[in-house]
Image (cartoon, rainbow, N blue to C red; front, side, top):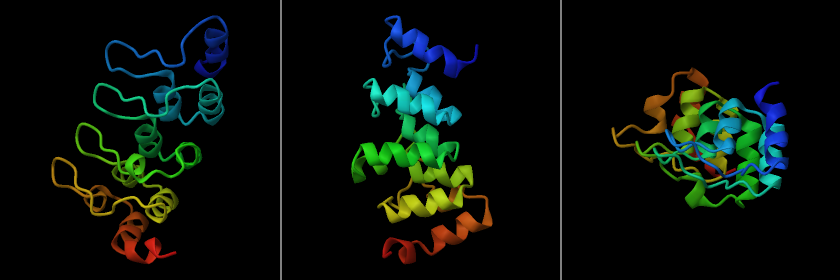
Length: 153
């Protein structure tokens, strides 16, 4: 059985959707988000998984989804949070926002989407890097350099 098949069995037999591992503080929602498992994420959210759960490094499931470039999971989370700017610009222990994570992923459509939803393009992490500093793909760099154009749409 794979991870996705196990989750309903565990939850239906009393397992908590919000239990965190002792080492990293990751919940099932963190793991499903990191893997881009949309149906499992959806299943967990329907069972009241904490969308704002933070790991020991202050990483949310949203950070993981953005880091992996899982646009469909990111969009679902943001809809669930009513596009709250505090959540969109929440920082992990290193000061990275979800825009930083999306820039690393190289998913240009996701980067553009986040900017259009109010992600702070100027946000700096603890190493003074903006999302632009972390971007490697040319299309992502271009989007970040022209961010004002996307914010106004």
